[in-house]
Image (cartoon, rainbow, N blue to C red; front, side):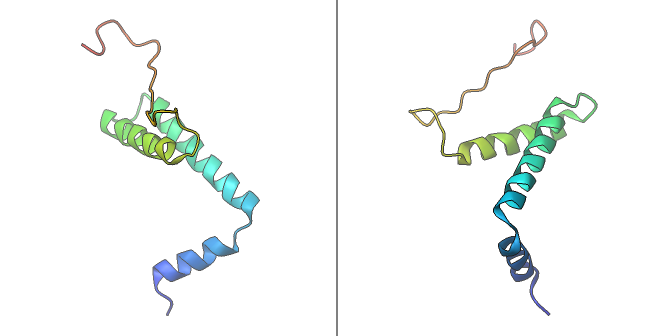
Length: 81
């Protein structure tokens, strides 16, 4: 029997570049929908935000200083106090 990690790696190698791109977009769309879903527990939404920030940090297109800037819009008054 093939170990799970080798099996997963073999499946990944068989995917076409367009399939990889489609799966990345689907995963990113799912994370973004979790961030925006007000019916989820705050801890689940926070986990989605952390995953999204990790993804953004891994992308080659960053600010010149390497910083990630997050802009919050339409927050209720006193939300961040």
